[in-house]
Image 1 (cartoon, rainbow, N blue to C red):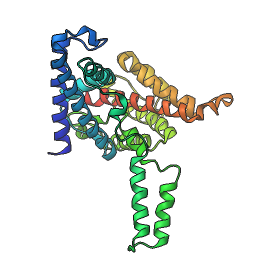
Image 2 (cartoon, rainbow, N blue to C red):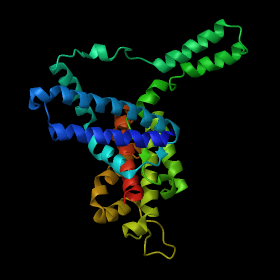
Image 3 (spheres, rainbow, N blue to C red):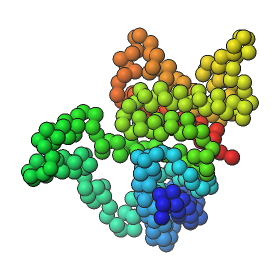
Image 4 (cartoon, one colour):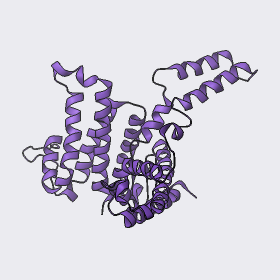
Length: 307
C-alpha cells in the first residue's frame, strides 16, 4: 500500500470511528465521563481507545509526509472532516480515553504510558552508531569520524526536535493537490515546511508572507481583484497590505489568517527599534512561526484545494 493510499485509509477509518463515538455519546465538546451511562462506559471506552489508536497511526503517517515532501493528494471528504472536526478535538479525545479507562478500572497513570521516557532518542542512536564505528576497525578514517562527530555535536543538529516539529503541523493535502497548485507554489510550501522542521523561525515568517503575496496575485481573478495599481504607465503590483484588504472584503473567512501572517512579518522582520530584542526571543519567534505556517496553510487550502 502506498503512503497516500494508507493516508486515505486511515483518514476514512478515523472519520468512521469518530462518528460512531458521537453516535453513542453525542457531541464530544465538553463531554465528561460522568455524562456517560454506567452500562455504556465499556463500549464507549473501546471505541474511544480505537479512535486514539487510529489517530496515533494517522499521526505517524502525517509526520512521515511532512518529513518527505509535505504535499500530497487525498480524498477531500475525510481530510476536511479530520482538519475541521477531529484535529481540533485531539487533546480532548486523549483526555476522554484516559478518564473513561480509569472509570472502568484500568490503571493508566502517566508513568505507565511513557514507558520509554523522554529524551533525544534519535540523536542517542546516532551517537551510539558513531561509538560503534570508532571501536571497530572500519573503513572510515578518524578524520571522517571526527567530521561526523562535529555535525552530531553542532548546536543546530536536533533530529528529535525536527520530528517533534513535524508532528505539530499538518501537511498540505487535498484532491489533485499537485495538479492544482503551481510548481512554484509547491516548491515554496515544501521549503516553508523544511524551515519549520529545522527551527528556522525567521525564514518561516518571511516565507509565509511571500507565499501569501504570491497566492493572492496568482488567484486574483478567482478572488475578483485587480492585483496591479491603476495609476501608473507601467502598473506595479499593489502592496501586500492592500491586497489583503481587498481580498478580505470578498473572503472574510480568510481575514484573520492573512492579517496574522502580515503582522508576524511586520513585527519580526521590521521591528521597532525599542523592541528588536524582544522580537528575537526564541520563544516568541517559535510562536510566531507556528501561527504563520498554520495561517498560510489555511489560506492555500482555501484558495487552491477547496471546492
